[in-house]
Length: 301
Ligand SMILES: NC(=O)c1ccc[n+]([C@@H]2O[C@H](COP(=O)([O-])OP(=O)(O)OC[C@H]3O[C@@H](n4cnc5c(N)ncnc54)[C@H](O)[C@@H]3O)[C@@H](O)[C@H]2O)c1
Image (tube, rainbow, N blue to C red; front, side, top):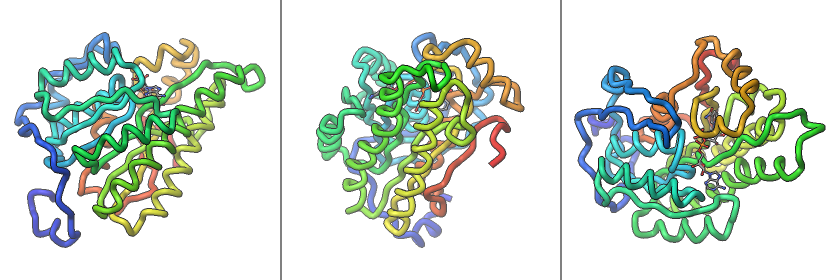
């Protein structure tokens, strides 16, 4: 669709952010996933070479939680698709490690980093202001946490607050600060990473399930508020994907999540990144406030 500019001309697409871009690599590189980023040694070259080429040339994205797991996979797919990316993460060491790895592959000019705690609104506002040099077309809220697994009546109050703080308050803080940067351009793509837990409610994960249901609600509200603005706001609801977040969960809970997936396997970070990145392109032009399933067949609505 993108190559055929006649269709794009029908939508009045504004100029893309003024950021230097790495030329799109024709070759999808071997899997980056290693013990740092998700503990999966998947050299899934066949899958990657079968992936469609997305066109994100000239776009600049901010990805929260970009140093690890799904955020890192999303950043990688964006860079492969020609975007420039700013990674926000509160873990400075992981951020440096991720950025070094990405700069080796894609060059320094397309990658920025900022140590940001998304639960801290003034910090998010500061970081958003700093995006003025690159501009911003895309925001992905991937920073998140699972919290411990136990019944609600035993759930530590501080753990409840931490999970809610990062998953829903963090998403609110970031959306609140990036939307005003997108509005003058009449263009933007926002994707929030919710979870199938937010639709179904996982036992022994009340904070996580409630926070992700809240992310779905926020996405629906904001999508409608911006529906005529050129800014699309959507969320995805993945089932379990093996990333560092698993270290927060009990083995029993991980087994429970796997047992609920009809495909009888975990999702791959690259699979989540594929849909998230498509939602961040101009091809996603008639969906907003929507919830996209990625659950290996688990979700029934
Ligand atoms: N992995 C899964 O099975 C799965 C399934 C459904 C949804 N999700 C959601 O996807 C998102 C990414 O999960 P993941 O599996 O990549 O987790 P992860 O633990 O691998 O990565 C999360 C990243 O977020 C960062 N982060 C945490 N709190 C932060 C904060 N306050 N400010 C800034 N950065 C912060 C961490 O440092 C880390 O780099 C989360 O919202 C998670 O709930 C994950």
